[in-house]
Image (tube, rainbow, N blue to C red; front, side, top):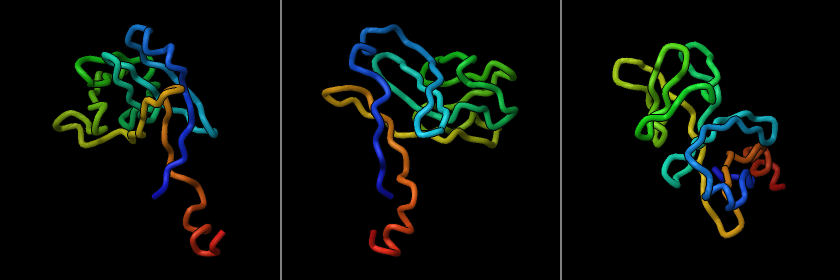
Length: 116
């Protein structure tokens, strides 16, 4: 499915220390994590108890929820063994003019159906 890309940061963010931030694009809230010059984007709410994941912390590319210490792999979204849950992940890429996040393009099915 085609992705629509949105610029979320300028390249200046590369000089910032590691972070966890809440962002909103196209009405979607998501959590962006910077770890050692890598960027990850995941859903903002913990699937276990609905906690705001930006209040958590990061440990070795694992995002830890602040409520119950549930742990999620930032690359795959998988919860720790035995949790039985996962996070929705979004692709992130670094281009010449900034950091971008990709979302599945809305209405793709209808565009194909009606050849719009």
